[in-house]
Image 1: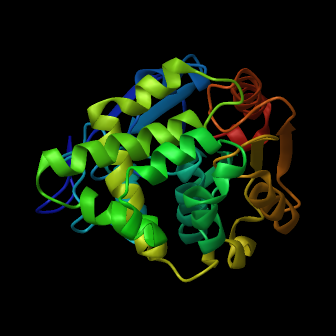
Image 2 (image 1 turned 30 degrees about the vertical axis):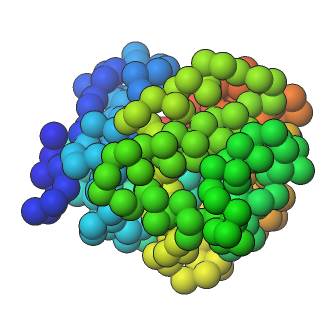
Length: 304
């Protein structure tokens, strides 16, 4: 546990080769937290694997805390962890919100990045937030209806505000049902084919509370960055080796965003998985992410 400030303490772990090439895993959400399986994208005989839970998420404490929880502070936390571990440069690996934070971190500290491995691209622009809140119903109308109808009819004209009021209510009897409904909605739309295992993971209390509350917080505040800042500042990362892996039928973070990033960053390798949705555990996406880390093992960019 790494103390960050008077409020937050961050969980982190290391595995793999102690003197290996460092790689840090950035989980999604924001607020979803990490799990042991996230180590499995990396060869432990080659990589020094760092997995951690962002402030307010997973095993970091306090769970679901919104005070002093912003994108600039998450970037600062990554730097604090890197310095604490004595790492000069590392690979940064993230999907969904993890791709958002990875890009934001790399644009702030490009000299610290050996490479970027990104999946299910999300830039958290107003159009993408609106898609999550409304557009997903074009592909998952049943899941969206459950999500929307949790809110009473008079409040449905602003689903985000209605959920945020409930998610920030101190009473668990108010915030937990809202958190589970939000989180299960996202889990239900994350795979190309139905996956009860995925839905059950998203329904767990720790995941649901961290994910729903912190996601709504970041959506309400437009990720605490100027509009479209990540795409506008992409020049800062174009010299960093990069891989973008995107599911063709990603309904949570539609492919149009990954396409825009790939066009703005033509040096990155752009891989579209033809039979996949959003989840990192989709077989094709999982295989491409592992393949990317295997390629980096053999490349000059993996030299410490």
